[in-house]
Length: 151
Image 1 (cartoon, rainbow, N blue to C red):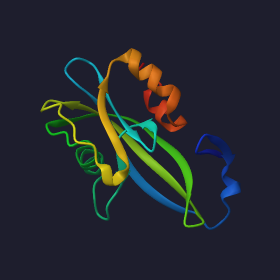
Image 2 (image 1 turned 90 degrees about the horizontal axis):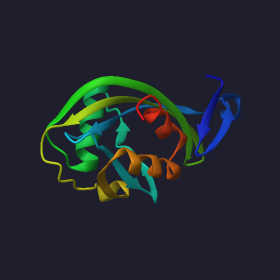
Image 3 (image 1 turned 90 degrees about the vertical axis):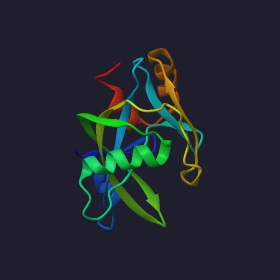
Image 4 (image 1 turned 30 degrees about the vertical axis):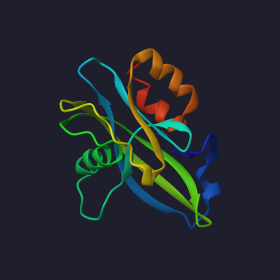
């Protein structure tokens, strides 16, 4: 891994310098019984639910917790590991390199969603494959990576 996404721009890791911070995160690609996929609208772009790993937390537990917190879904069944994506962003003038572990999940409970507004999430909706393809035009490269072998 010599390059990484910074927003929509691909940069060389050496551009981050020596002072970057690494964080681990996890998220889910949630499918419902109709084969639709859950996507969230965060900061005016389509995204997938994900978040930082807590100290001592197992990464699969992080994925399940973050999906529940950001969408309000219950009855989630963890399925296969999909991939790890890497991207960076700046926070408080410092580069952060984020490694996100992605897992497939099946929603077996209620599909009523409650977007976590504290995380700037305005929508959490299930989309069919055609709608997902359209949404991928307005998302981040790392999210496209998660869907790469699926659609």
